[in-house]
Length: 103
Image 1 (spheres, rainbow, N blue to C red):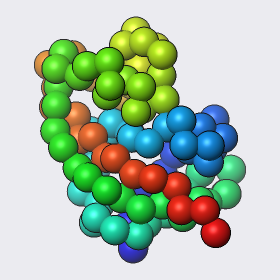
Image 2: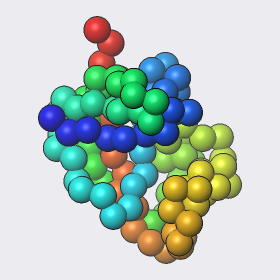
Image 3: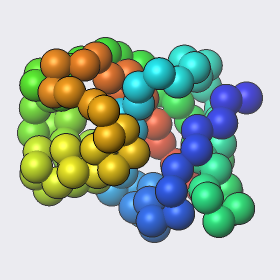
Image 4: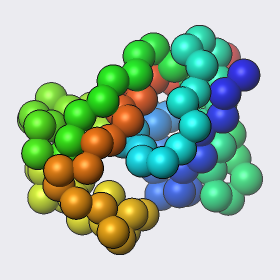
């Protein structure tokens, strides 16, 4: 079962289903199927990893931004640069789409 690590700030968005995608760089490719969202404060949410695709930030559209739980491309860029300070808009991102499994 794959685990995807998140900052605790994303817990509610993932739990409520407003964040159903995450953009990553230089991380192992998770397996499709059941997984876990693990948060920096120790909480976890069971998830289903649905799809993996690759895009540059330049190629991301409004739907990608919304799936990632952000209102604008600028907000998403700010968040990505927080986690990946050397990221360039032309770098390839791994987009992991998932859904929360409510138990």
